[in-house]
Image 1 (spheres, helix red, strand yellow):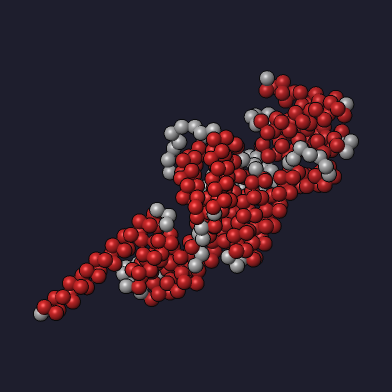
Image 2 (image 1 turned 180 degrees about the vertical axis):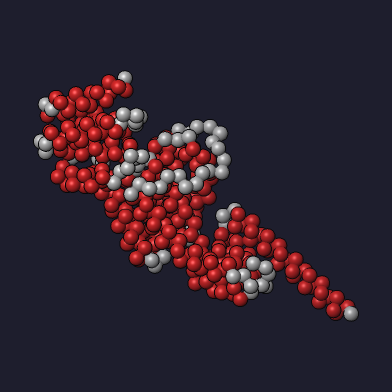
Amino acid sequence: MTERTDRLLARFELDEAVERLYRAGEAAERAGDLREAAVRFRVVADQRLGDAAVRLARVLFALGENTEAARWCRLAVADGFPEADELIQENSEARQRFLEHAARVMVGAPTFDWLPAEAPSERIAAERVQARTRALRELDRRYGGIACHASVLEHLAAVEPQIVIGDAPTWTAVAEVHELAGWTAFDSGLPGVALPHFSRALTLARQAENESLIASVLTRAGRMFLHHNAPQEALKAFQLGFVAAHNSWTDQRDLTDPARAIASLTTKVETYGEERVRARTIALTVLARNHLAIGDTATAGECAGEAVAAAKNLRSVRADDQLRWLDHEARVAGASGLVEQISARFARCD
């Protein structure tokens, strides 16, 4: 009787210890320490306790350890957890979903597809956000992503609510934090954690119409795909990033190749719907500047007229800067009609 009691007591103590490990795994996962969570869940899954195999598989997919994750999924299905099959499918589709999102970003489709959990308690200037981001980026460069990923997430939690009350500079600043969070997650061996950050960075960069940042995010995502043996996905990310970089080039003030810029911008303007007022205004203004650069004053005037009309209710320093540059170039070229069109814009603003 004593031997049987001892066995029951030992089993009870084992079950209790395994249960504590399961809770510790949950706590580690909530805290973002996925490697610690995997260690805890792996022990519990070996004891076939509850849905530990499913929890372990989810963590392993986030860590990029897909082969082991798939093995635990199969064991979980055999133990009566059919939802584990969905994890395999979700993981295989994650990269594709990201690339589809990136493609939508390139045609200007996304708006905010999420909101921060909390409203901002105060307004934080974009410059302050970027100063902290630069400091964390320097830590990443010197000591690696593992050393600063947690600090980046703390920074992100503090500034992300700003997107609710922000403007283009704020959206850009927070997008840069998401980009860094994705990059340091990748460097920490957490590719599954990195993708959502890259995705949100793209959404915010599009909201800010920041083509160069879109190109940067896609390049980083492509490098991550290459590292994790996904060359096809990497190629698609690099291709989309190249398009964004080219779009950024055509938005620059330096008019080194007007003919090339005109071809690109003419196509680009046609993709902007009525809701993308700022992007259309800037593109039309840059198009006018390039036509002026090759001496086509008439077409430059048409483009400028469309830009001024589009900007009727627009308040944007970037758009106004482009129009002022066009105004300066028109004065130098002696295009008085063009100058009058732009003056009308600023007369209304005054």
